[in-house]
Image 1 (tube, rainbow, N blue to C red):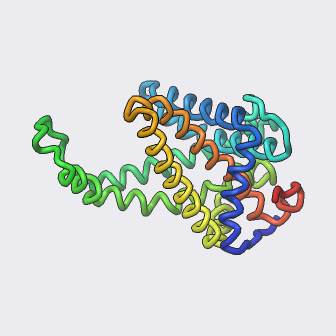
Image 2 (cartoon, rainbow, N blue to C red):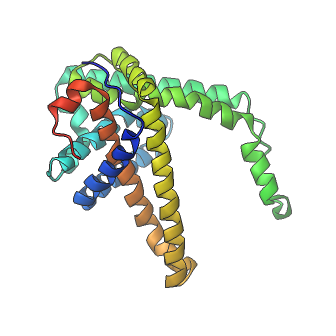
Image 3 (spheres, one colour):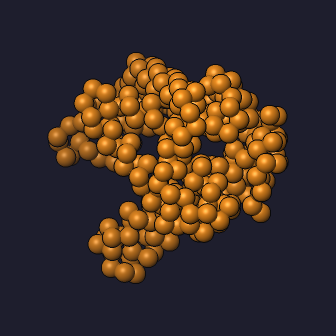
Length: 261
């Protein structure tokens, strides 16, 4: 397995491939993403252990969505069992995926504790007069905890971006998977930046179109009807595109699959 460096323009290709693959199987991909979000949300509701369980299973769930994207790109209809792909290749991979989940939860907890040490937000007041936009903005964007968490979360996401897929498709150990994931993200930082900017542009166009549609159909009531399914579709498109980022970041992964162009 060797890292594959791609030009920055590949970031836009990843966006296009994600949208195109989603359009091929919109019900399957949006349905699987809904199951993913519903499962994580239900776990967080469990007292004491809910948050830990959701963090533990997040890398495995992300792999399930990537496996679904791979199947959809090959013209297949991904079934719900695709979400548990991480636990279908024997006990060794199951243990490895749980180790990744444990590391993810532990590091995430450290980030949150670190950010809380710098939390300067004032308690929410019941006085409506004090809840001005300026006060809310200052309480949020002026809080150092927000920026510290964002700064630390970036390398955390780099560590886990490719790690579940490396463990599953390349049998890489959890620690090595984290290392190679970070290296691949750094090697292709230009393409990843274009990828993120491309999706930001798509989301902005989508938001403006949705606002226009809502005004034409009747204002806030119409917006309430179309907003949730529309957001679900957009988020599903984004997660569909992540597989292609992984596929093109490692030479043998790109060669073993049939690239979609």
